[in-house]
Length: 159
Image 1 (cartoon, rainbow, N blue to C red):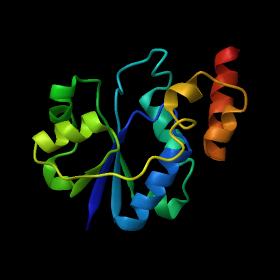
Image 2: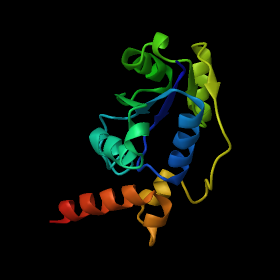
Image 3: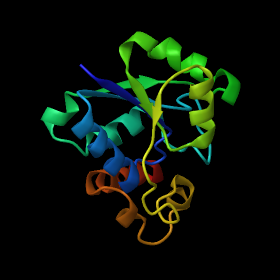
Image 4: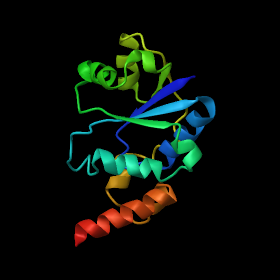
């Protein structure tokens, strides 16, 4: 069984994340989604780890959800992040890590962990920080189930 780790903050889970995860599910038997900075709530991290997990799971049918595993890793410096990751996801549990983040790639390679990546999708539009600034039409930048979920979360918070 082949397993890939897909780390990210997913603040929020947007179309590029969805496309990557769809491709990973085609190539691997299992995907371990690692939700990073799971202990941080601030302007750059407005959603808690369970909310992010729900956003991601809302986008997939049951057959694919069965192949998605989740781990939560707290915020850590570049130098200690991989150690925190390996506490939650032991090296024996995966084959490779997917990341397009050069800082993450560097740290993984320093620990002799194989890394794969892909071209970026609409990076100028699909960047978490831009989406979190809630521009008009932000719903176009996230999968429809995520837009519905976020709309419900935002309505509850405004009450």
